Length: 447
Ligand SMILES: Nc1ncnc2c1ncn2[C@@H]1O[C@H](COP(=O)(O)OP(=O)(O)O)[C@@H](O)[C@H]1O
Ligand SMILES: [Mg+2]
Image (cartoon, rainbow, N blue to C red; front, side):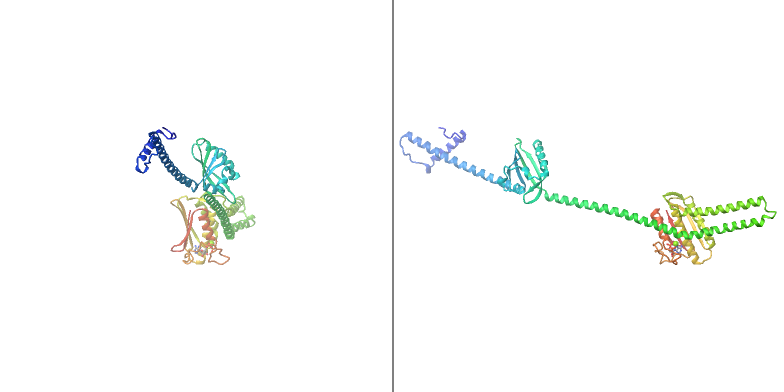
């Protein structure tokens, strides 16, 4: 007799077997009411069936309890997960959402079900999100996107949404991670970086401007120094011209004196004119030399240092002769420098004038300035030494400072050596130094 047809035959037979065993146990022995064998058999059958049902019931209850425990566990896991989980149906409406998800989009869970998820996304990101879900549908792997969610009454939050579609394509499962703080930090950082970049650019510009301003200032001082030298140079021109002018005057005076004498012939006339012309040319050259000196160098060129030194010495020759100063110049080889020749001779003239001033003050005998020009490794060295007693130890550290002078107001400006150092070190990348030797000061130019 098979009444319990919802069970498999195996389970049914074991259950029946167990029910029969149960019947045999003394506590379950019931006294038969009917004596007839058929009635007795039926009763037995019924009792067994009842026990069978009771046992089945117990097992079902146990199974249900187990299921409930598992369900509670998973509901708990889902609901209280720290990440927002949202399930969307094929029309992209919310079909399930956990507590974190509901809190992210800001609503009571029961009221969120059935609403379109798109409406919680900021207008600007809505299209991105629609595209994203379209890609999720065809992508076999988990993909993600970043959108801003509107949260009623609260500031918007930036979410990273990871999504997968179910195999049937009927559902989307979304995991929402709040990256607002990370985004703000990133934005703040990039803002700071931008700010720093701006500050850097500003500083660089300021430095360039300042360097330019300094260069302009240097250039102005170089000119100022050149002008200071100019006064001195006009004096030199006067000295340079005095002798040829005197000679020219003599030659001219000779003409009326000799005119009526037998010596006044063609030869006399020719010689007189030739000498006069030569003197005039010499004077003209002097003017040209000074003009060249006062011209500013436009660009760096390679020049023969010996030639420049000789030219500078010619400019000062006469006034130095007048002060009984001997100049001695020794050269080794043909040193060449890449730089500014007129600035180089300006430096040299500054140094020579300082030596002359010191020699005049010193009032020693055999006043002498010795110049030595030679090549040392990759450099061209020019030393200018005098025998005027040297520079006092207490001031030797200051002589290159701007406006440092030990001379009277009308004789010294204190910018000569400062400018000379600027020209040599800044404009030509060399070194200008000073030290004392036995008889006097020695200045050393290395370029
Ligand atoms: N050859 C030298 N011997 C002694 N003192 C010197 C010599 N060259 C420079 N000095 C000292 O260095 C100072 C600074 O020189 P400089 O800058 O040319 O300015 P200035 O010649 O206008 O005084 C001079 O006043 C002088 O005291
Ligand atoms: Mg000077």
